[in-house]
Image 1 (cartoon, rainbow, N blue to C red):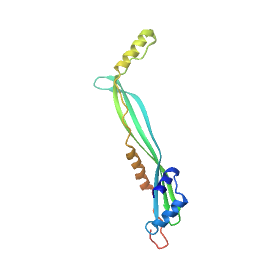
Image 2: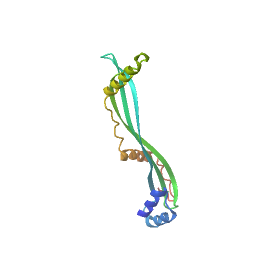
Image 3: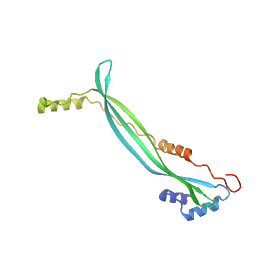
Image 4: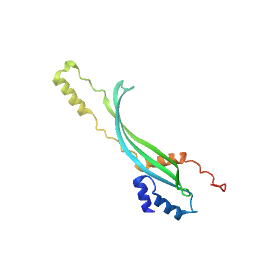
Length: 168
């Protein structure tokens, strides 16, 4: 079975030789086989700054939200062994993200035309020194994101057609 799975991993489908071997080996044991392959997995990071008014102190603070999103796309194929045909296929994308928020403190003074070069440089240096260190959160676990695609597959999977004997 290893060679057949390697072929599927590389090409995304079963070769006619592999399918024929599996039809013979599994005859009477099962009617359908499900195959899945991770087609794509990406991680994206984003940041967003928002100003929030702190009611108690009546000051405006900048809140920085850092996010790490993992996205995985999984393709599924259901083969009917009796006919060797793909009877259903889908490509399902699942994503999840983790977010961290940081209070950057009071809104920094904007540069003013009247500050001149040295005044603008001084404000920029002070603002950089006062900004806290921020780190992106770790992205969600790969297995958990792929598991979500499998859960969605289970919801979308069609019911098996009845065979000639009236059963599934």
